[in-house]
Image (cartoon, rainbow, N blue to C red):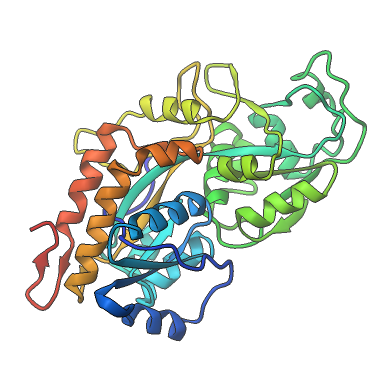
Length: 364
């Protein structure tokens, strides 16, 4: 299943800075973009997806420890990241969903750089339930579509034989902001449920038929954690940070698989890339007995031309370090590093970005 948009490109060099959840004003972001820290330190600004925030925070801080680069990254959601890179108020954006053709028309040539793979987990709060919950695409479509209202619904009970499910209300929790995590989750539901695809649909924002809302992966995690009976979709790192149980989801091979780095990596191993190396591919519901079915990579969004060559080369340097030296840290934080077949073109993609009045290639 092809996704609409750009190719693939580069990531940034920098130090850990505030990772706020609020959307900074364009004027404030532009001011930060144009400023540099004292002593020759390069300052980069970025905004977008909360899905990769834990690993970006860590990468940025670790890279800054050995390099004169500082980054201010704000996890405002993928929609906000696309908007700010389009408006030119940041040096790079970040999104779990590739830009649509309509979005690309407003920012032609925006380069997409996959950085890591992550799993969208189904985290829940069911006090007293000892066994891990099992769910499938149909039951998830029913839960988030508002047709499954009780935890002991026959559709859930059939997937969990011998489990004493509570006769309590199901409280689905969804994102309220423009979200790449929502895109991934609804893309999965659309792949396994024709009714979902034709009804609620797929996108960074959809009209949810039921449930509570939360802003960012943090907001959904918090809502689930404080609400008995709640269930939400969050990236694996957030579920682990929040100490929330996650459901085993039935995959395309009929196996119930818990989200993990290994199961995320298995999904990438079963991805069939085109002969031209186009990486705009869906990672949901791929084959393989060990594959977790709700997986995606997350992208940095880089302008095809940057006026400041110092910033452009700093960004390219961080990309290379993150996708190579940063791989071990990604695993520690529950993300899967890119497979070699994806890492190589991702590293090469930044070479196509140009900078300065003479349009120098940053890879040269």
